[in-house]
Image 1: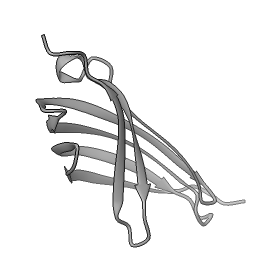
Image 2: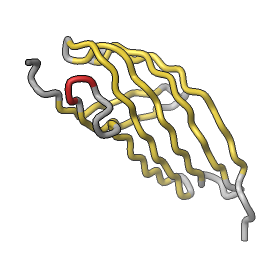
Image 3: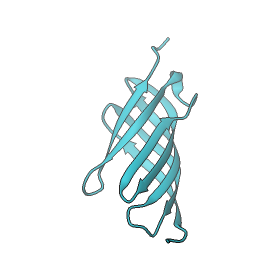
Length: 112
């Protein structure tokens, strides 16, 4: 039976390009077990930029786990953190070589 996990902490500093032109900063905590492909992480990041032609900020909350390579990941906009009432969920696709691609399913009430 494996014992414990290796704990880690990392600062986040990202750039987003495409429908979302933004930058983000944040903090991530992780736990990597001795079983290959099993780990977990949590993170909070603040995103600032332009989405759908509107400038603003929002905060993302990450919760991820891998069980022997099978990934479960939830990334949501923290309630009431988004400029103009932005809400939503984000997905990450990691390709060979480590390149990340993001999908953002969001709602942004009409400007008014």
